Image 1 (cartoon, rainbow, N blue to C red):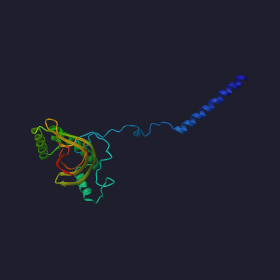
Image 2: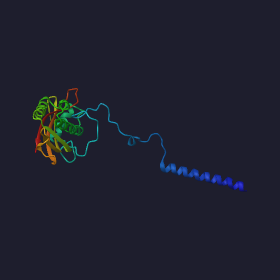
Image 3: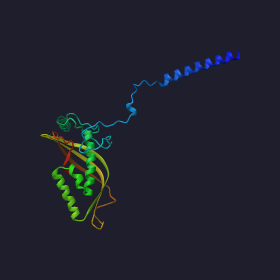
Length: 229
């Protein structure tokens, strides 16, 4: 009798266990091999993507970088700026305004830093010939005067495309940068001759980049600079 009850107990618990397993499968689901793994897998940028003004690793567009001058970051399709950007896209299908704005921001940081450090080798591939000559002359002037420029780029608050145009095969895109900087010029003795090391200044620069859309080189060059105080 006891053996019979033990046998029925085993059958009962096996049935309960089977029921619980079925319930868990219905609630948690089963792997079928067709799950969407993309959301759990880090994304790798596509190979051979043409860069913006400088060749740099892809990175998410920062919140403080805008491609076009309005709240949504996309200009009206009928605006002169959007029409000009469309002309550039026709000439160069790889052109994408938001990615360009990010590349321009990276180029701005590199150029400002290289100019302060007097690094003409780093500046050369980023600048058009006449702009490079002006920058190199300013760097030489500092060296001749035995002065050094210390620039601390605190933040680039915005990088906004404000103008664009096509001239023949060449595309021109103008970007307005608003940044926070500390600029100090010192003489050979280390004394401050210009600027204030304790003062953060908001600087607005308007830079124009250009590229021959038929050229194999995907990089853009800085062709014009101006500063608005």
